[in-house]
Amino acid sequence: MELGSILHFLENSCILVTGATGFLAKIFIEKILRVQPNVKRIYVLLRARDTNAAILRFNTEVISKDLFRVLKGNCGENFDSFLSKKVRVVAGDITCENLGVKDTNLLDQMWEEIDIVVNSAANTNFDESLRMWGEGRTNNGETLQNGRDTERGTSGLHIYSEKKLMEEKLKQLGLQYSSQHDIKSAMKDFGIQRARKFGWPNTYAFTKAMGEMVLGQLKENVPVVIIRPTIITSTFKEPFPGWAEGVRTIDSLSVGYGKGKLTCFTGDPESIVDVIPADMVINSMIVAMAANADQPNESIYHVGSSVSNPLELKWFQEYGHIYFSQNPWIDKDGKPVIVGKLKLFDTIDSFHRYMYLHYLLPLKGLEVLNTACCQYFHNIYVESCRKIKFVMRLVDLYVPYMFFKGCFDDLNTEKLRRLAKESCVEAEMFYFDPKDIKWDEYFMKIHIPGTVKYVFK
Image (tube, rainbow, N blue to C red; front, side):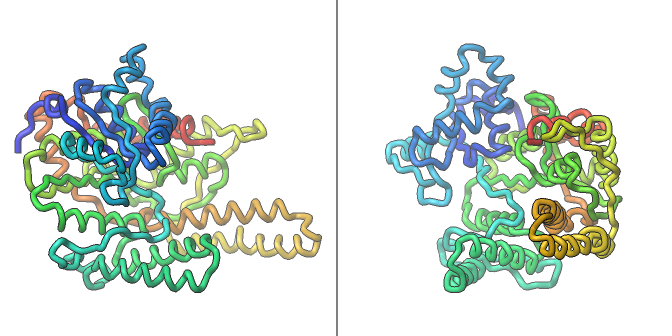
């Protein structure tokens, strides 16, 4: 495997990006346009009823973001014309045949021009209701399955069987419930159940794994690169430090804690929280694309920090406490939210006991009092229920990560880093070495301030 100039690799290339309104896709598009303005074209696929609606969505949900301010500054008054030459917005849907592109001439043009496909389309809700598309079979009718036994000793996962089971469950729920809300809620529970049966913590990881299985079976001689980032955080350097969007994973804890809604949680203080800044993920993607462009195989890269620069949960807890003590969040009434140190219970049982004695039991008393007083305490009761439900949902979703004892093998990624440093003339431009990060400085000066600026509402 050789790696020369990445900018040369990108020059005159044509790239299709799906999920273009997503967090990573935005950063990818911005990076390519900023560092290689001689890219031929970037097709961005967006779900929309037609091209005009897709363009409107792209402008409002992508280009209008502060993320593009550096690129806009570089281009000046030529930004709009530059963008119109380099970006083609396409209305479509990856779950439909031919990506949902209805214009046959455009479809033919895309088939002819596209060199690279970057699939960033995903639903990142950990507890989304279970849905599958496609037949789950290879062209020769062989059932797709996972060749390994899971940690629970369960036999291999068969995608077609799972799809059939899902369809039967939907049919059953359709007869049982009349409300789509009830059906969706039941399918969320069903998704978690099926995921954990095979050793995955949630529906997101479960369906993502099945997607990888499909790619591995159907790719034939097409070079395929799979990037497996760990917990993605705000940008480390580019286009500027601290850009973030949406409440993602550990930011749920930061938002809850900073706003005073989260006073306790559960997890092993010495467990490793494997995080990686978003710009490092994008750089690893671009380098992996260039390195594997002529390799007719499947290459998998774990992009994280747990091996080379581990971050312990107790450090993250401490960084949050220091930051929000010095920079309290101002609530809607203009008052600072004073936070104490987050109580961290090192077993799930001790957490449940604490919640029962300090929150659930008093809540039951408040419910009785509210009923006796003709709903006089209704607002207090509803707000208390909301806070408790918020904490319990976070615990249910993130406990598998808070007690996780392993590290992700990033040997392939380390080899890619070495290859880039030894043979890539733009290694500094496409940095992705987590050893460069000083966690205290990153969280207290970059990530948490960025989360407050771009994510807190």
